[in-house]
Image (cartoon, rainbow, N blue to C red):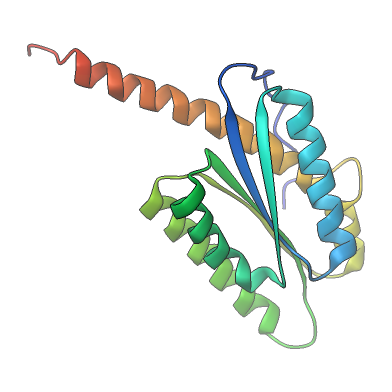
Length: 170
């Protein structure tokens, strides 16, 4: 796992940005820290952002709520936050794989970026480092990635609109 987080984004002050965060309640100490760090980072770099937070019981429930939010609310980006700590069985791996596949499928089908920070960690030490620690904080990383992809998607949509308005004569 990389110990590098994305660089600080540009300050986005243009039009209204809508970001939805869907966070698991399970392992609440860690997920609360992910949420807090993500929201603080968004507030620091997106002056006109609206952030909606939805809490779900666990990581497995995140994709279905994201699907509903995309269909009903049309956010510019969704951030999925959770912390799965491996135990003595393979259950954590099954949940992590299922969530990952569902989030990727939703992003592709709906055309809405989903930042995947549903972490699968070995133990509480790793959870602390990634969720609460200052150096490798995945909540900050999620926010930076969300702001970056919102900007990229905006550019792509502007380009596509421009191409439709001014088709080439080639």
